[in-house]
Amino acid sequence: MPGQLLRETNPAQGYAPSLVPQHEDVNGDYKRTGEINPLPVSVEDGGAAAQVDIQYRKQKMVPTHAGVLITNGSTSFGTNVWIDTDGFNEIALTLINSVAGNTLFDVYWSHDNATIHGANYGQGNSAALAKGIVLPILARWVKISVGNNHTAPSTISAWTYLKV
Image (cartoon, rainbow, N blue to C red; front, top):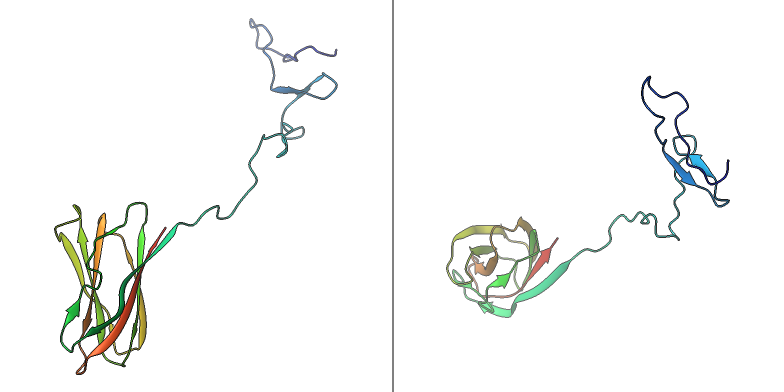
């Protein structure tokens, strides 16, 4: 009968018939909802979200060393600023070296934007002209130092990439 809710046809003894899972069709009739007749849903009606692999990837690039001349056996903090890592879970570091000599990253971590609370020393130490590393975020703030372990001065540019 149109417009009436469906009830179970074989209720347990002593119990009134319960309502069954159902939905109303376009004609106003109630139809059983189940595997054979699923609840009708359409994206146009706002009933379901369209499947998306990646909706948004947050990234931020911070240059830390812009053509900095570093003498042999020395290190440089470049811009010497603490970088806020809030909302990110990885940090990638890249550098370009003017000579093929051993250069490395020292990564300093802080919880208060002032004090060094931890460090990753000697990251990416190699004689390559260009190099990069990826590390997990270990604290709210990070500062990058680049070291020149070569026998001659070197001009170095370095960048920090914060990633989700």
